[in-house]
Image (cartoon, rainbow, N blue to C red):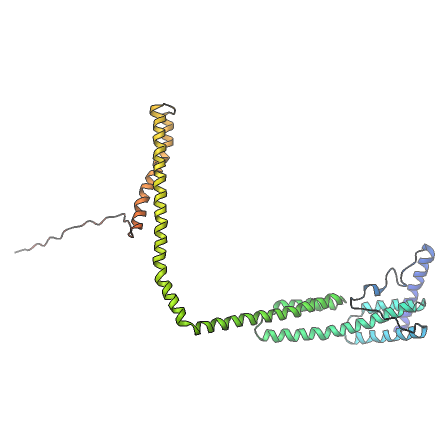
Length: 305
């Protein structure tokens, strides 16, 4: 019954192709349309031309292809692509294009082998993923890749599914290698501290002794530089004030009002520097300048008779 339906479909396609050629003068490249399914075959497909290209051999090849499609269906796998390819092969047989019959039927057999090989490979990758996950390796990203590979496979995108699966397998090996590297470094670090604990202790003690004085020395150098910088700044401000006084009161270049406006900010800065310098000098000498002074009082012992 299935074979009869296929022949009917193929006959309709052939009649349509012949009619299109007759009325339009267009010569189609294949009996089923403008392309052959062989043109979009997976990358690994290679056609081997048989020595016998007779009608009998072509019919036998068609029957074998139909059996292959049944086997794919029994595996609960998609047969959309091979079903359409079989229609092309059957149409080629009706048009006595036996060479194309062999091409397409070989393609159908190749796709079956590719599907079975993929199922074997993805099961191996899944088993490996579970094994590595049991070892404490993070395999979440690999699970995503496996799902993508399965999705492409069930859409008959065989090249893409194989490519993603290979990438997933490589990602697993990379994750395991990274985990192994981290564990090795951890063990080496632990052994290093255990083996050289007293040398490490001496180094830490030495650093604890030398760092505080070194820090204080650096800090004092920074304070000295700041004191010099502020002193120079205050001297420059005073020089500017003297020039302003000359321009105002001697040469009468600016008004007293303008003078006051310009001098007021300079005087505020001088006051700020004068308050800051004693604090820095006290820090340089190693003591803090207190805002409050303690009043010294002498105790008086009163003796009552």
